Length: 223
Ligand SMILES: N[C@@H](CCC(=O)N[C@@H](CS)C(=O)NCC(=O)O)C(=O)O
Image (cartoon, rainbow, N blue to C red; front, side):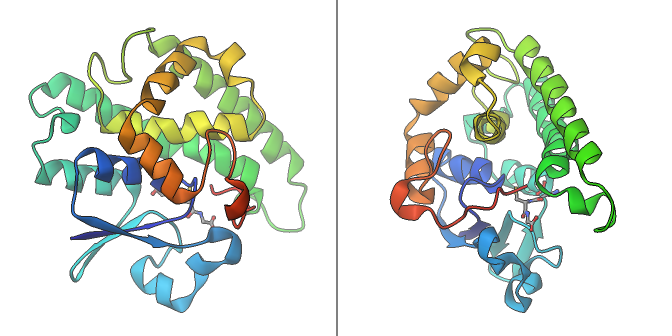
């Protein structure tokens, strides 16, 4: 049994979708970032950095999306991990690494500028540059996708579950995803047809670009 510590709509959504795709034996533990539940002493025992995602398997705790994707893929031969196509599998890891090390950080510039400069300095250049970086990164994603492919190639993979988080965040910061990123939008429409994606969104209380009315508990953006 795996426990996934998540916050609605946060980067943990990718792993939540993935656990459903592979029909894993898992449970969810909600950690509301907006309410600082990630900063409590109890949660810091799970992840000293105070971030989601984190997973727990009996007495084993693991943090960092990259490490969790690698761990889950080492334990399963489900098609979504692409063990039958090592080049596409490598591409999928290339994408998850880039998303977490680079694209996620651009969002942190936007939503958590206080991580980059002292509290009393001007945050606006950090935020503006974060916006610029997101546009550049999103243009690369759009260029990389074809209207029929997934992000690592011909097959749907764990990298697509993670990429979905960033498609959604684009809408949350007011980008016109449909107009500016048509291929990525076609990809998102295919993902939205998947029961695992629908179920994860329903359970987290999120819509494609918003939060479900009755669950507007987490107003702070996640990065
Ligand atoms: N490098 C980590 C980053 C995790 C991360 O920053 N998660 C965000 C949510 S998307 C978070 O927990 N933020 C909490 C905060 O900023 O207080 C990973 O890839 O898993």
